[in-house]
Length: 380
Length: 39
Image (tube, rainbow over all chains, first blue to last red; front, side, top):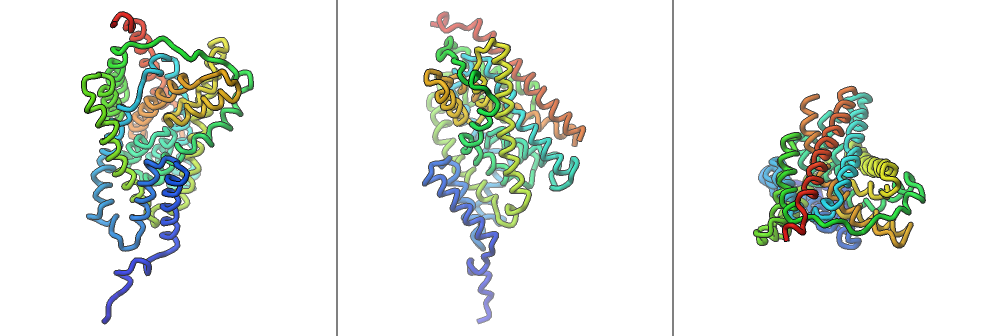
């Protein structure tokens, strides 16, 4: 019998890169299950990595499950948009609407996106040519700073970045690392006196009509100024209208639960399926992960610095720590702010202010994504 | 390099412009639509 056994037996096709990727997949599943770090997304991603890297498994080849899902859900930008409907249905804009000033913290904290974009472009085609980062790749890498998985997927898909898999995994992983990345920067940039500032827990309630008008008006304003952000902000706010209008409880519940859960499974598997050894294990991937940390650090620093400006302009009434929650890593960064505020002053509950800044960051990151999608083609 | 700098500046300007308008809208909504009046 003259049969090429290697074409049928998986382990004969193993190499060190595949073994590394199988270990990475296993490690993500371990983090999700044993450490409860973002299990909802890390377990599907980890499983996707395992399945995609089994030699001869055929999952990523033309017609394979992951190839089909990637074509249908990522290249068409369908999955991130459906996820945004679910996120919109889950977000309560109440704390944010009650404290409108927090929107400026959300705006400032997007600097990490643009700072990292600039850095990536300088390392790539813009100046040093150390890496092969084009303007579009740099924009996709910068968007890790949106601290928002669906926005990262959306922007990197539209720009057809060859680093999309690494970018998406970095975006999701760093969200889980917010409690580690943010506190040292927050402490470094603020004085003891600033961290001790107490802020009122309660704010004037907003009307239900405000909660319904806000998402609709936001779509119109964002869409008319930065039209490329329309799919993202439109889906986010559609989900929120379902939640707030009070007459489609079934649809709101479906968006929050069934829709989000189904798309999360498919999205996680597909993202994991994009991490194939031959494409993923490159020096650029490591650099993208490093720049992800820089993006989160710059976001945090910009938010806190803007918080310090508000502290001065308000006559020392705003605690600058809440600026760190301007990134849209919801609700992790708000929890980090609350925890640090309580460590400094056990009577100081900053949570609602931080949640306001956090939801503002969600809107701001979508606007930032739209701005990138608008500006990059203008300069390409 | 200059292009990248322009993108950074314009990007942040767009974000602050859009969110500034949203801030104005929120302040107006909060001023004119009070919960007590609804109830």
